[in-house]
Every structure is written in structure tokens, then in C-alpha cells.
Amino acid sequence: MANTNGSAAIDWDDARVFLAVARHGSLRAAGRALGLSQPTIGRRLAAFEAAFGGPALFDRLPEGLRLNAAGEALLGAAEQLESAALSLERRRAAASPALSGTVRVSVGEWAARFLAGNLGPGSARPLPSGITVELVESRETANLARREADLAVRHHPPEGGDLYIAKLGTFAACVYRRAGADGDAWVTYTEEQAHYPTSQWVQQQLRAAGGSIALRASNMPMQLAAIRAGAGQGILPCFVGDADPLLERAMPPSPEIAADYWVIVHRDLRRAACVRAVIDWIQGLFGSERAALAGIRPGVVAAAKTKNRVPQRQIEEHAKRGNARVV
Image 1 (tube, rainbow, N blue to C red):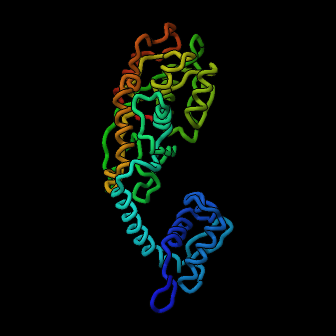
Image 2: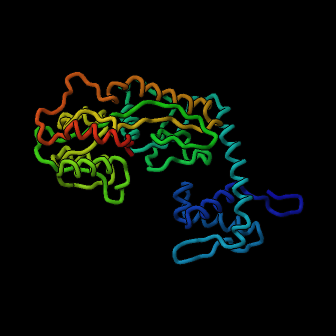
Image 3: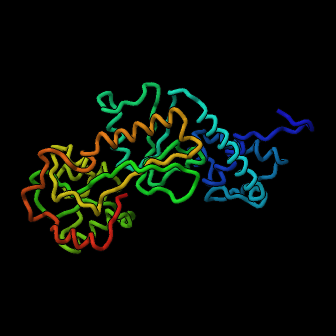
């Protein structure tokens, strides 16, 4: 495609590649972000540079690619182009009445476990058959304006942005151990994750009642495996711990480590048929599974042994110091 003066028109896909390389610092990382191969990223970046007469827009450094002055001069205009293109894409998606396609959902590990566990045919809240849910687990909420995800399920709603936010419910949590296990060892997050509220809560218990760290693991599946094996006690959401016959509670659910969750979607996409169907499905699950999420199960009681249980007096003392939220 050419303009009337014979020069090639700017291809939005090439501008998108330019922005991805600028943000991620390498062809490989930009390719991962866009779902394209490294050679494709290289060709499109070269085409974008050629559209401006061929000067390199990045300095090639040992640690990666960094925008030079020529690239910096184009960054603002490229971001404006991106914003306009993404706005059109969101509005096009919102205008489609079709209940088919893929809806990408940004989630943390607890929400990922909950939603994935309710996707089967036996779910009380099945999705429309034409919709595919793509769960993307990440510590950070995806940029919904850039369509990194269509919606997010998070326990820290963003404070700004043109977003629709609705509360879903609460995940109760407590300390679990292998049934019949003894000892005061803990399973918790790594030292790099010591700033997580759950990690801080465990440290409070260690200072108050003693004990040791048996394992540090960076995610809940590894922690769950260790707790099931009897390595130590650790924090789990009640809908996970109560459903596992190998586990028992070491204490009742604590409000200090409960997590409120919200669904977050860009306002342009809120009424898209597919996105609306997935939001309805998620809200329905939080409603139908409210008892399990709250840790209310017939016959589920605290473990009979008490010497490893966190004293209720200590729990109440810590609660007075402020509520924590799980990661």
C-alpha cells in the first residue's frame, strides 16, 4: 500500500512491533509478548525503520536493544497510534454479538486454581459451548487497555483507568497440615517474596510461637504438594484445603489472610457478548461456591491436636494491628 507520493504507508503491525521492542528490550522478549517469532519481529522492525528512511531506532547493546534519540522521537506518536488502534479493536469486539471465540483472563494463582477447577462438564455454572477461556496467571494485572487480557480477576483492583470493577467475593484461608502430622515447621514463600502479606503473617507466627521453615516455594502448587507430603504446615485457600482428604485444618479460617476479589474489565469491552458471558460465569461461580470459598463445609472441623495450632489469642492480637491480604 502506498500514499499518493509513492511512499509506503505505515503498517500498524510494524508500529506495534516497534513499541514491543522498546518496552521489552529485545527481539526475543518482544516476540514472546506478541506471540511472534524472533525473525518476524526482526523483519517488521526493519520495515518500520525503513519507513523513516532507514536510520536505526535502537542502539544494539550487549544487554539488549535500547531506544536511541531517533527512536525516542517516534515513541509518543507510536503510542498515540497504538491507543487509537486498540480503541477501535475494543469497540469492534464489543459490537460483535457472537458467543464464540477466546476470552483471555488475567488471574493470580488462587483465582486460577478456582476458575480452572470449575471448567469441566460437571460444573454448576457451565460456559456457553462456543467460548474458550484462556487463563493467564501472573503476579501483575495485565494492561487491559492494551488488550494483554480481556478481563482480570484480582484482589487488588486498580485505582485508575477507564475500567469497570465489580466485587466478586472473598476467599477464606487458614493453616493446613497433613492429617495426623506433628511438628511446628512451616511451608511458605521464598525470601524474594517475603513482602507478600501471607509471608509476613507466617513470620509473625514464627516470632510469636517459634518454629522453623521446612520449605520455601514460589507458588501454591509446590507448597500444597509439600504440605500434603507432611513437610510442614502452611496457608492455603479453604476451597483447596478443605477439598483435600489428606489435609486437616490447624486453626479456623482467619480474616487476616482472607482475600477479597474483583472482576475488572475495560469499559469498551464490558458489553462484548463473549466477555459478558465470561463475567457472568465468574460471578455465578463465586455465588454458587460461596460456602466453599468461605470455608463453610459440613463436617469440617479444626484438628483435634492443639499443640501446633496457632493460639487464638495471638490471632486476635495480630488482627488488631491491621488486616493483611493474600497474594
